[in-house]
Image (cartoon, rainbow, N blue to C red; front, side):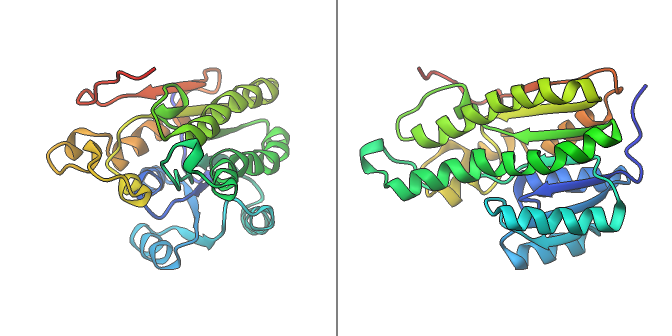
Length: 246
């Protein structure tokens, strides 16, 4: 039986744009009470107003911001049913010799440590409830290797494997953990990463990439699965993308 998400409580990091906004919109349509987070106050306010959700300025790499976020959501609702770790960034696409130590550390922090900060705070809440879903948005870079993507790929691969460990810890308590690994998407990722000439930025190819609303549909499907079923890993590839890496 499909689970009803009506009146459930969700946090979506990086929820103001791209996949995060698509996920938020679909959850809201199912009657979920959603809190979105991010660092762009204008984008947060605009998305919150458009979708009728709550916005919280919070940096996913800052543990203190996680504490403040959880205190706010739990103080108002007393529960957390869905945590979507969507915030992430490539920051610098370059060979290892061209990276800086600080940039590599920042890449690992936003793509790997930030979700872990959320897990650590969500785990006791969901264990006590005996229910909950944690969804992590990863990247095809976790599975394949391309030059210049090393730090980002390593962080995302770590996310996928660490999420498997989290799954084993939470499964006995009825809490499900899912990691979605998408490839090309119609988001602002390419522009934000400064990747010139990337096919996902081509207006002719972009409509054939994964759309934010499609990611939202997928996350909703994961959350609506019957409680005795889990979907630990989902990989989504656009048919237009030929994958020929190492």
